[in-house]
Amino acid sequence: MATITLTVNGRLHTVDVEPDMPLLWVLRDILGLTGTKFGCGKALCGSCTVHRIRSGVATAVRSCALPIATLDGAEIVTIEGLSDDGSHAVQRAWIEEDVPQCGYCQPGQIMAAAALLAADPRPRDAEIDNAMRGVLCRCGTHARIRAAIHRAAAGGGDR
View 1 (cartoon, rainbow, N blue to C red):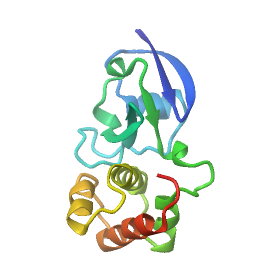
View 2 (cartoon, one colour):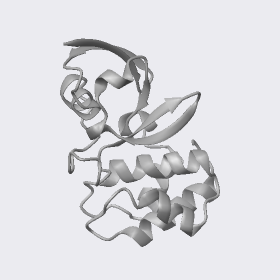
View 3 (cartoon, rainbow, N blue to C red):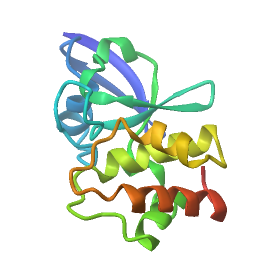
């Protein structure tokens, strides 16, 4: 067992877990934050995307393949921490563009889009496609995802 301290959604947590336990299972099973989804377990589908904050910069990471032992002292933001009330610009744009279909990939999509906009507030289609290609959407809502990202970029708000 390893004792790991990390900040998740602004709250400090100390967990005693196996050091090779993926962050995803710490979030879901230990901390009860079930918004982050399990998809493939191999960091390929992106459903488990969360933000790792370093020096104030959010980077989209795949929590299913990130051993908790590598995160002692880390700052993590999940879909639950993006905003308290769904008011983040990306979340609002997702609703306005009617993006979700089945909804399973949406937390990963939203987290990837928010990280993109934090790094590039006015991305072009190519940058959006590149950033979002790591999160699979089986329903094929890619055109609406792109439109929502453009809407969030144009509308400002939290990023």
